[in-house]
Length: 101
Image 1 (cartoon, rainbow, N blue to C red):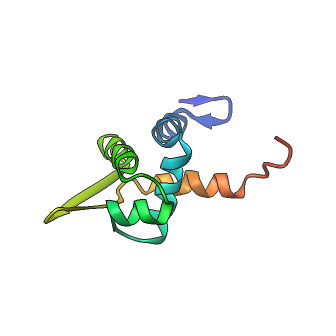
Image 2 (spheres, helix red, strand yellow):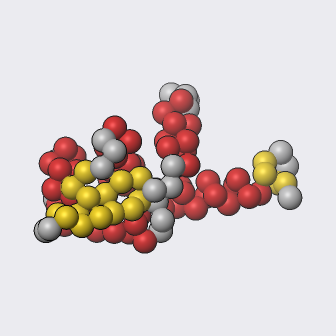
């Protein structure tokens, strides 16, 4: 099924991703995880210069939505990207000419 020229399945997937990451901190987290395959919460917080509790909250939210995956090693929780399509959305954003907005 299509809406105009867009594939409805693709539209729904992109809308889901945008809703799940539609926050500057979440986009920054994804960018950090794009460069580093897997990081502990403390390292993500350090790199973003953000409070660990706030970072943890956003990481958990994206994990529950299937954007991220995690593993525990002792007291540390390591996060990595699970839904790789999110990188395509970020790439589109990077390539978008925003000067006219």
